[in-house]
Image (cartoon, rainbow, N blue to C red; front, side, top):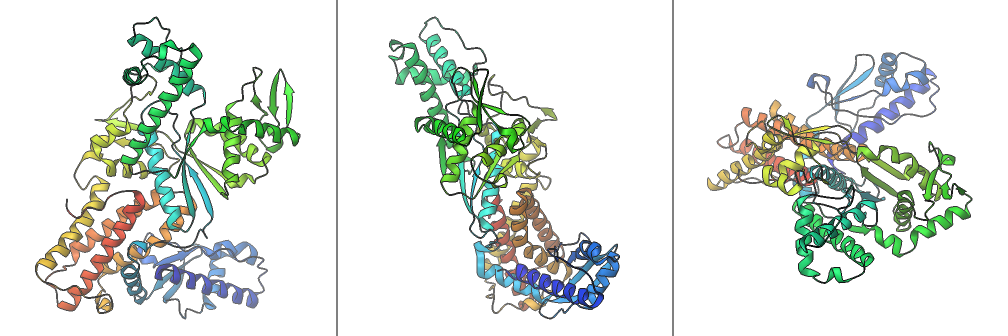
Length: 559
């Protein structure tokens, strides 16, 4: 456990013990002591940590929060907690100020743990499957897919660092209506190129990339039109979706996203898994027939209405395939499932929660994160996007325009459930106004200082020999306190499913470093202080690297 998390754990234990002692003295009827939440106050004058513990206890204690807080502090034993001063503030907050010696342990932790600093066993190795992107295999990755990729990949990184056993999965919907329409569109373009009469499908894909694919397909399958119509359609659907999936894999890899599993929907059908789910629901008495269709009694599990699982023409519906897919996930041993969906799937949550329960699993074991849309702006004008019409900015084009790192950071700046205005101009700027440039420049500047020290034959002491007690300037202490926050930020971001917490943290750390650099000279100081500051800079560089690695962003040494 890092020094920061250890110190916080010691403070929590001490506060809980103080509550018990105060309750015994004052006769409080405390059924359960709430979790002691420690937050870093926005104002430095309020100390290093603050807790609303007294407010949470006020109802059980039947006393005003301030009175509860004062009673708790009267019984607080600060031994071993680094607490130097504690006071009641506002309506009942308890503010804590710590002695600076604990910060020296933070710098030592970073030096000793290196790339592992910030990691914890909070998740207790719980097996989690995170499914994200899962775009239909009907066209190149676009910016909406790119946001899902950045959020899902970064959340996976964060949960992995927080001690979960995470698997990343992409569900290839290659057996649905869109895949069928894409295959028909491809066949129509093939016939057009062969100068054969054709009919373009209604709601098909007229985008130029479909015709480009058809030209490749003609070279690989020159005798396609000699086959029966049904075989032509099946071939185009399979060939086209396979080709798009390979392109999607390449796009995502270039974006820094790799999946552990690419799960094909057609394998569910080939394995008769839809039929098995239907049979299971039938055996449980959860199906009924009406108007020639087969219905799932999803209202039994709090859905707003029952759902058709097999249409009157005998064709299974989307929910049937999704039920089979999620059952397969559970059967592979995953304890918790997280799906990242677009806002157009919001109404789908209730029916899937009902399905999970019908299959014998807890509703809470399936978690849905709704990712809001992206407004792409160029010179203040919104860029229109439509994959079917071919009017969209692809992931590849986005990376060519602003770069992978800027693209990922801009997608991660806001909470997943917030709409995002992506300013292409700002993302491409090499200026302090561009947040990812600002963060990367902080790392590059540190590397420059360390190179200069090496060039001047200035020795950086080992962590054991560094005079860390000399780091007493306000900018130094603020910087170390910010370094101390990474382990807690990772746990918080994992718990709240919020990659934006790490994006914000990286920017705040860069800001703390730039402030330090303004106020504290490194090279040319007295030898012991110079050495301590060089050790501190190495720690800052390491934590910037660790933070950026979670975000899937490079930490350049030169800019």
